[in-house]
Length: 111
Image (cartoon, rainbow, N blue to C red; front, top):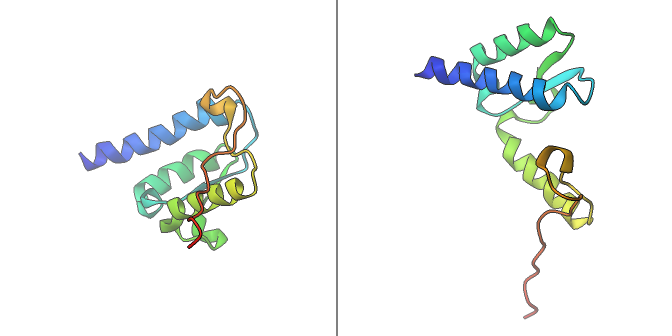
């Protein structure tokens, strides 16, 4: 079951890249984080496949971002964009009708 889950992860990444990313943009690096970055089989399969296709595979820790911090960093980035009232959705990826500021800042009432 673990091997099947491992291959499911690799195939999911490759399928998402082939369907949604590579047709729209040139990619030079694939940055991995989260639990999969610590899995030597997942990392080595992705690295071997993408290296042969001219894409460098790196762990987020290579850029000083702990691989365990993926969700924290993503939510911090979304909060930053919301605070500055900038759009942070991708209508072309989500099917949304238009760009939108995501989230809402709710300030505590004055005391």
